[in-house]
Amino acid sequence: MPPVCSLCGIPWSKEGRCPRCKEDPLHLDGVRSCYLYSGPIRRALHRLKFHGRYRLAQALGVGMVEGWARFAMEADLLVPVPTSRARQRQRGYNQAAMLARALAEGVGIPFCPQALHRVRSTPSQVGLDQNARRENVRGAFMADPRWVLGKRIVVVDDVCTSGATLEACAAALYQAGARSVWGFTLARVILQQEGC
Image (cartoon, rainbow, N blue to C red):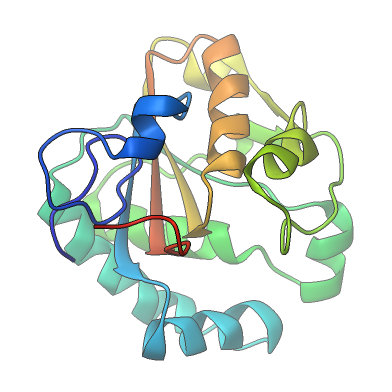
């Protein structure tokens, strides 16, 4: 990936924050993604997420390990974005947890799915604008201070579009006493108005 915004991680040719983050910054320490959400990565994620190809998680996790080394992130815990019970029943797995587990094995940082829980089901974020996405996931998560108090947390997800889900997770983690919260995803969607 090209150079990125220091906060949201979108491709950005200048040093520092992109215009969106200067105007409306994300409420977490930052987000980094390994790939753009296009081509083979997009197809692989669709197969993993919607077609039960859960074995792809291990291979995609290798890409996340390589990305982790590129960004030199520091963390005490890797925490996956929790899925709703309905989606867990429907799919039979949480793809974010599978990716986070593979990443944890590759980088030697503890995987801690019990640190963060979804306390409210939310409709899909697809098709929602930034403000609607934030409102949709506001208050949807709760963190357990027994796991996160004073810790540097990296929240792992498959795709980042606006950062709203990662922000909502971060809000719960900060409330539970996390020292820092970063988002780390396999892929990043670039909206038309973003980028350099």
